[in-house]
Image 1: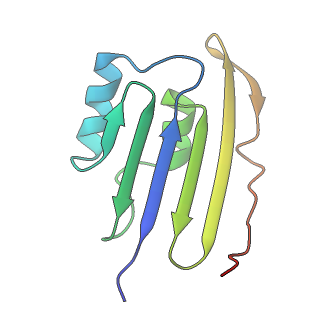
Image 2 (image 1 turned 135 degrees about the vertical axis):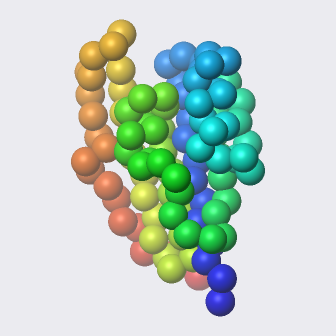
Length: 98
C-alpha cells in the first residue's frame, strides 16, 4: 500500500510575495502554489521542510491528512511581524469515520 499525505497551507492575512512563492517552489516542484495557498500530495515520504516552520514563516492555516487516519489542523495568527495568537501547539486529532 502506498502512502498518501496531503498538506495544505492558507495565507489569510496577506498574500505571498513573488519571492516567497519562489522559495516555496524550491521546496516542492509538484505543489500547487498561489499567492494565498500551498498544497501538495506526497506519496513518497516526508516533505523537504518542516510544516510548522512553513506555517510560522508564510501562512496562517495548516491542514494535514494522511492515509493512516491522522488529521492535523494548526492555526497561526500574526500582528505585523509579531505573534499575536498561536494555536499551532493545540492540535486536534480527529478519528476517521467511514
